[in-house]
Length: 499
Image 1 (cartoon, rainbow, N blue to C red):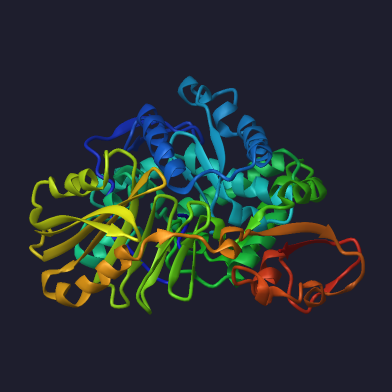
Image 2: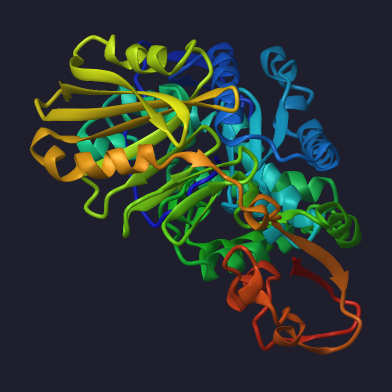
């Protein structure tokens, strides 16, 4: 189970609630200002949320790539505002962590206290180390400037409301989306925090400054933002897209070279691209969704790694994450959520764990079976805070030493329509035996130098329709930061899918 697969746009309105403000010295200006949290609190908040982020999205399985990104990040950190002669000790002694998340979404973000993330999706869309340095510098800037804490203070003063995107619960039927996801409320708030445009511009300035100080060609970062401008907004993502919260990419494509030139005029020569090094590091990286961690085909959800499958109704949308698979009705008024229960002693205990919650009334429960697998089912009712009455169908099945629990719910009035579909989804859970599906492999990018000249289109594989995921020529052009009909010279680096 892994990252989102749907076109479903799901939003959760959240507030960052703080009880008191803290006045501390800014690491950037040296002035004292008010923050929503103390620096020590920010470090703890980041640490707690980091554990949830890693559990929810997972780290990309490459120690070499993780170490590469961390090394660049630590080099940028060393010349940052946190490590200058007049830096207060509370900042200088803070450890930072740089992680590559196993997500195809093109994104980078930071948590307070020194936790920086880039996705493999973003890594595949960069062309050289200089671009990566600008991105990492930007995210370090958010932490150094304490933007999350600034926004928390503003929230406390009643100046703003933080709005983020999460999962179905709040919009769909009034249930708390963060709880359904298994993503703690603080991690959800921070992950979907929307900084102000001025916060983003300040981080752009900081990112260019740090990259320039290490002699990277900081102006290279502009080309990445040109690519972002070409990417249409993608809905149904578990990580918010950079385009959704940052200044207009066209604006940034113009401003970043101007900022880089200002630092060049100050004596910071910018000569480093490290394209060869970068391409070598991302060679063979997974591209797009990884079908081994779950995919849909012809109304069925398959999970080759865990060797199970189940069917779902036509026109329902699938949300596939590391810790759950959710199937949402076309009208977004019913949902079936499958999670792994690693604590209960069996299927019956797993169902009872939910039924024993305050506010849940059991209607009936019994033992059952799914394709010869031991299972337990129950129906129950409850209601949301606004009084909406819900009806649940619970189903837990024991398979492969693991308990898979389906939580299905809709309103009481709609249960007559959706109840049979819930039972068909959960009851259709069974072992996956199709060898072709069990052996399916992800698409990987091959970083190669063009052996001839020609249009980019002429280098695209002719068998894209045979790939296990959808790969379009335009997507590949954007990823390579070129146009489809752009002339490619011999020796130019290209990132091409291989299956």
